[in-house]
Amino acid sequence: MNEKVEVENVNHPGKTERVDRAKYEAMRAAMLAALSTGGPALNAAELKAAILPALPDALFPGGSTAGWWIKCVQLDLEAKGVVGREGKPLRFRRTG
Image (cartoon, rainbow, N blue to C red; front, side, top):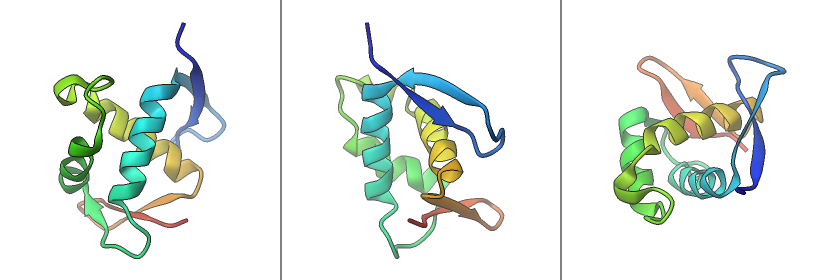
């Protein structure tokens, strides 16, 4: 059985979901690397393009399901104050 991790959602405060720990941690690491502290804010397409090459193929074969995981981890990191959003279209930057 896969280990799970609880994630939050900035759009639904106080609500948590349990997701696969290995996929979450791989996506979190790739996202934080793409959103380096002090670096430029990235829109969703730029963020996905930066993340995809860093994902392990064993967890995300051919990038499958990466879009869902990007959004899941982005919303969790926003709820935790690690990632922030700005402008329209939305751009994301590392805040902590």
